[in-house]
Length: 544
Image (cartoon, rainbow, N blue to C red; front, side):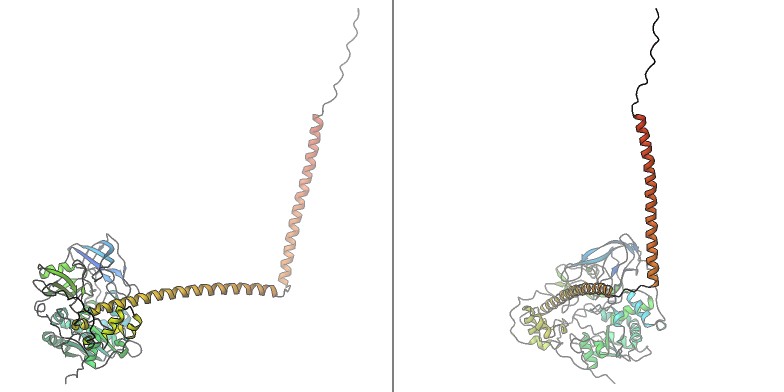
């Protein structure tokens, strides 16, 4: 009996462009001469480097440790020498720079010792999640949220339903499709570890019905598991691969505004995340590579198992460079980001390198004023009012934008796709979100400073009061002479008397010495007094 499917509002059906890249096998990873590995490849706190410049590292060796709960470790994608730990350009539209570890590869591709956990059921949940965190596992569907955190079931209601997302609705991208075709057994084994950690009773796999080979491979692999799994073909419509949209399609349930899927007992993971989890648990390999679709204006569109830190230009060269490139997108045409340069590295969030050209991606016409046609509202899968959000974002009226549920926007681009005025609506929503986050951070910093200042004043007042109370208590306390006090006073008097006696003795000795000195001085004075001359005897008288 087939499962009843539901429909979400909105959505669009753009040209798929899937067949260009899904007919070739996965290309093995090219080994570049240099890897640039950013330390911020996940949601949460940036990883902390634990290697030094000049140090030799091995493939799979941890080079940056997770910092805090919402963080993930970073590993060397190949063996070599740490060339630098400095600021490099990130794969982001802004072109901003952040801390990266640069490794000069040695060509040996020598692995560090690995620690697989084939008997994962013998490990407790905390040990298993710690292993996944140390392996650097994050969601590879785009959110890059640390998977170890997502795999902790809520204490209140648990996680009755686990959904594996294989929809891959974005045009041009086929990395998940090809991965399911070639590695379905490993994907379902990784999913089994997820089911073990979450304790889910219902396990669903949603795949768009335009991926027939992937559907067949996943159905065959799921039949080998010792628990029930439903592999379900969902209608092809963008953005059916959004978490909330896939949940609505498969279960008919809606995630409330401002809530997470776990609040209704459902957790969603991407098929690529399940495959990476399989490699981390059963092979002991950390997340150092991922399948990336390289397509668009290249000679041989295909999927490549790219090492994290590889330059996007290297992947373009593997797929065959062509003249007339007009830019590179990381991701698809609906949600992808324009890269500042082709030399930025592949990161964990990179699922596609889409090479642009003027014929494939002509520049958009000049944006015109909004005509309030409401086509954007009809296409919005999140049931928002995009035209109102655009107006508020343009006017910097962020309070009203939040009142209209700005943060429920999944930035799918359906509104921009159907807008007859060619307004880049999603860019305005991203701007508004970033401004709100910046204001919240500034407010949090101000609140913290105020709390610290108020606590300082409170502490000073408390210390002043305590000091005054001690002085008052000492002044009003009755003095009672105890035996101990009397003994203490007697001892003090004895010490004083002894000191007086010593002083008097010293004075007596000094007085006697003074008398002796005076006598000696008197004798010296007598000696020095001139005496009367002694008369000489008279001479005898002369005789004649």
